[in-house]
Image 1: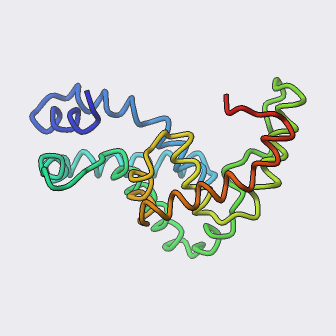
Image 2: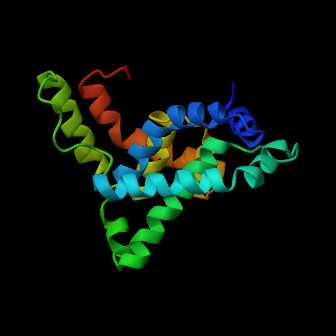
Length: 188
């Protein structure tokens, strides 16, 4: 069953639809929010706000799903809501500039100690290569790779054209190519 179908089931009174939808989206959505705010409590608060808004607006959102003209992606819609909520937080707190300055937020600076030396070296190489890239490039890459979103879904989340997302992902892949070649990383 698709995310959109689960939302429709919830709109028709089946609470299990929302429970299943939450279980599907919670990990990735929380990671997306946390990577932008770097604060556990704040990430949880924003996650709760987004989920509450989704529940309150279920009937209205379900109409988008029923519209045959729209190619509506609930996942992209929810991520866009989360991104907007993070932006609102930075705007209200007067820290709007901080969001744009933290461009290395997607690459961990402290890899898991259990990883092999080669994995750690590969992670450091990625960090060095990705740090100078703009925040939106990180997001496009993360959404299409870690969240397995299509270019179209990522474009909806980021508020840009599908071709822009493709271009940004290509830029990231080009930037990290030397790491992939040096460590013979195959993507697994």
